[in-house]
Image (cartoon, rainbow, N blue to C red; front, side, top):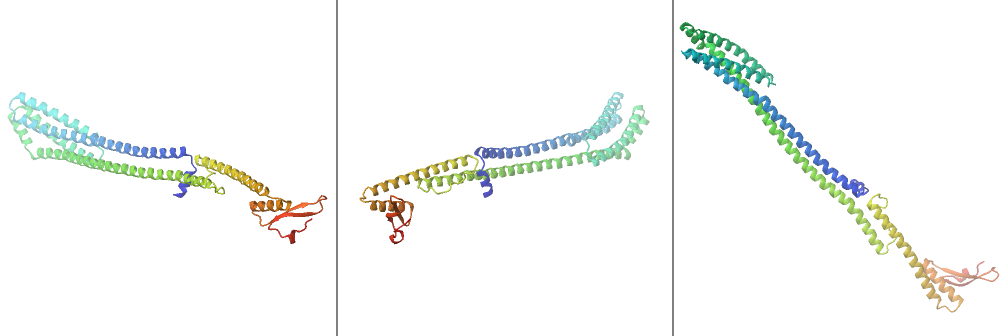
Length: 344
């Protein structure tokens, strides 16, 4: 964390804001893309359920109705004594057979599973047998004589007719059952996908919120800490501590500019302090020299003031003679005359 904070401290404020806004935008984009992908998958699942499974079920059910209509129309032909009634029943039978074939073709066009395709093949095989029996019985009923009617009725009541009808109906019902189960499983998977997408979106939002808060805290720390350091530096300068090192002057951002401004202020304060020290020292020296009455007293006062200002342990003031060949001590501070009595 400290490494990240130190890295952020060197960035410009505008860059930090751009990173923060970019992070928020990225999180929003990811959540949006996840939501769009989930919605698209759910839409495709719903479309597949409708187009493949539900439509297939509807066509299979219509084929079942047509199968029932064929048997009912054939029986209606056998029970009718009038030619017009038999013709109407025969027409309904033909229409029902056409409808069954059409609906089976539509249902087959929506088959993607091999087990459903196998059941449709089984139905068509049984339906071919059933249609053949129906056609034979209808042809006998079309003759209109009692012998043919009796034979047709015998065919309709036979075990083969009943078995063919039941087998075809069973195959269609199995197709419907499989498609219903597939639709149920697909719907359950869609619901599960929606739940996962919702949890993922919530998780991303939580992570994004936590990340935003954490990044905000890091950015805040990267701004607050250098400002506190600069504030401490300004307070030290205000207290007269001019020998401190101003931090963060190497930053190439707003904080670095502020630190350099504080450093300029420090340099100005040092120069002002140096001028003040010189002026104060000159004033003290001038005041001390005004009370002297002799050249030796002048030397002692001057040496004492200079030693105090410069922090010297001792000092001595010498005057050369007119020829410049001999020095004579005329004053000093903490000076031993046995050592410094004569100097060439």
